[in-house]
Picture: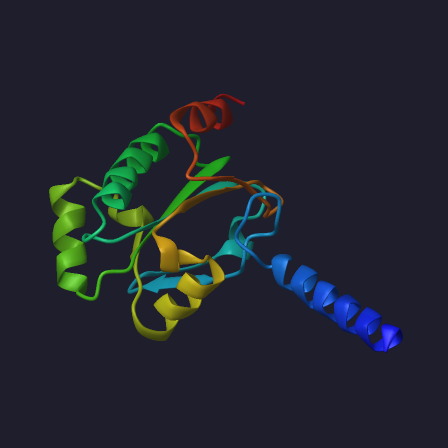
Length: 159
């Protein structure tokens, strides 16, 4: 009986650890994704070698919408060779998304709208069920900050 319990605990521990390797949490490799719009397709792997600020937002979540505008301002002042913003909107209506991008003066090049299966998969991979977050990803693909502060972003932009 002791052997069975030992192997059960070992199996549970190993499965829990292997799941965390793909978690969108600080210190772990950011889950892979592909974003597409009419003229552009972006994969996280394509951005290796740069810091990536991956920001998730929706019009119904005021805090994430404010962050999207703030992060867009940081991206405008950043060196594109070293820093990239990918802002992912998860509204049901693409028309609403486009209107907010226009009204909030967000950079259209950094904004992506996802729905359906793509949105579901990204939401699951990045654990967005509890709210929209932003992730700062280092040039090696590791998550180094969740919802990075102005100080962290400034430090990254300066170095």
